[in-house]
Image (cartoon, rainbow over all chains, first blue to last red; front, side):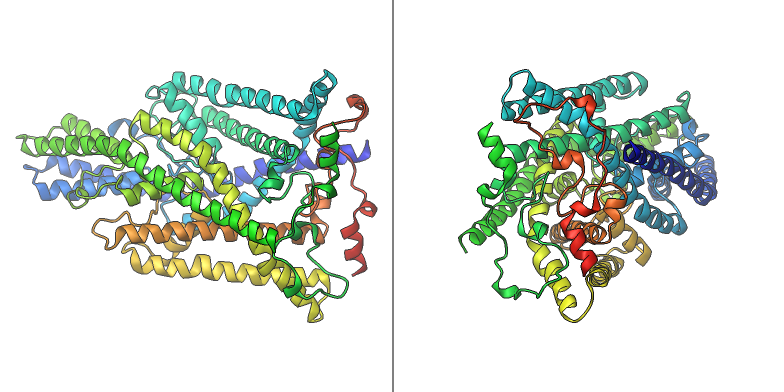
Length: 315
Length: 315
């Protein structure tokens, strides 16, 4: 029990540190970017007033005005009247931005305006991205027993052979993930975001959970949304749990591919034990070093040498 | 030699299929999105003309005009005069977009306009993202011997102990990657892209190779750039090789962490052999199933049971 306790303590520590790191990022980004944003917003509003006050609009003056409008828009400052009160760098929005950085989703709305913000983004992601991967890996590891190993064992005990059991389990898990992390959230976004269709919602969920993060659909970006900070927090939790489930799905697929011999066929590292030469060979060498040129670039896989393989074939 | 040949044949096949898949994506995206883009561009130009022709500009008409301009801009159609001739969905740009989808970088400039484009993006990424990961994994695997194992052996033969050898090798690899994939490309972008500072270049390289892809800096997006298609192709190759090197760096770090006992300390799967319960235990169970409630949630790590650990401690 001691080690189980230590394992959960470590995970809780990871998650707590993750939240603290996001809060720190939120504070830092907010304090770096907010003054720049205020200045840009003030400039663009003054420019708009000047543009409206001029007696005749020439093509050249319109071009110049639109150029500045589009530049400000690139940095998340909209010239439109109804969005002028909203900041992209309040605490919740900054935390949302920090979260999209460390999860590598990166919608790009908003983006840092200042050089200091850009430099800080690099340093912040440099620590945050590997740490987030670490937290996600640790979480997925704790979910493998209840969500993968136990159900497969259950299916086997109900009379299924090993290979069909893994396939059936993967299909069931896939259905649950699609329902809970794509279709259900898409329906919620369809209701909450006025301009999003159901397809837009599915598209947003997919593009986010694959960490592509195009940024053409970003939640809580419409003006006048209620409980905006709470909504952004909910999306952040959705992104984290969703990414965890995607990673779990990937690992389950990898394990299933192992069982079916797919990884061996494609000469890739296996999920349970890596069997290719560069993986089985320790990185350091304590005995006399073999001459490198005598070694083949990659070692053939001998199915007979893989115990879990043999046990499958027997099953 | 037979299996070495098969291994390289497989890799060549993967890369060829990857290129064909990108070309197919380029053709599909171009044919789906180009008509929509042309229509939007035509609409926005007509709107601009109408706006210029009106006798007086009211705040309301400006607001309406700017709203449409910003919506068009979101889909990559700029109202500015100097960028009106350039399409975001020519073959090279579409291929660039397909590439940012499958690598999960996802700058978001441009983004699909039509529902058909969004649906196709989902299907395309659904196949493309795992396949790209497969190609990258296969490439990294072939690079492990010449870039990681051989240099570490060389350092050991020159008299270094195993642990310092792995650390020194990792630092050297890190320096090479930073120089060749961050600083050198940043210098090139600084020259090629008129409005990018050197910091912008470093920021772009970092944000891209971490697959965050904010999209505030996208190469070949300025109007009037020469050899645009060739330039986009070069950036695509840079992205692919860069991502490969980032993955190699990550695996090298993981292997180094194994050697130094860091993964054991954090109770994470090891790089060479996974030692945690859910990894050592086969996913399928051929014997009588143990009662799940009797099993601890996670198994303690016994350093004595790890052969490569013992060999390191001896070294």
